[in-house]
Image (cartoon, rainbow, N blue to C red; front, side, top):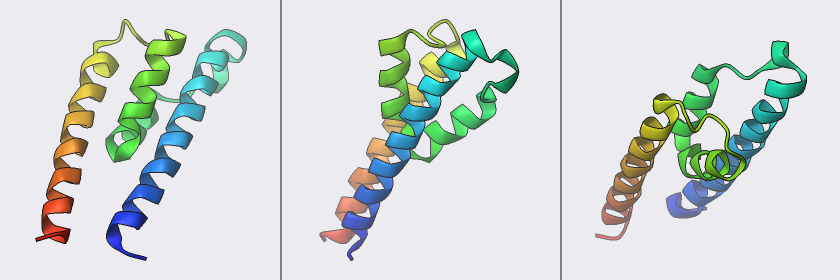
Length: 94
């Protein structure tokens, strides 16, 4: 398996996990306040590739949209991840 396929599989998995955990945290905020996902965990998921999925889901379900940490931090992660993908393509296809 080449590096592009591996990266794509990783991105799909981390995006799905990030989206599911974000929805879980929204539900836990109302029904299980003691079982919330720590903000640090959410940010780490975003940092490691789930930022786009997490940001989209947060906007869709209106979760943590008043937290600058997420509404600014996740788009910054998205830009960084786009740069990394661009550089990965340049290295692999030059």
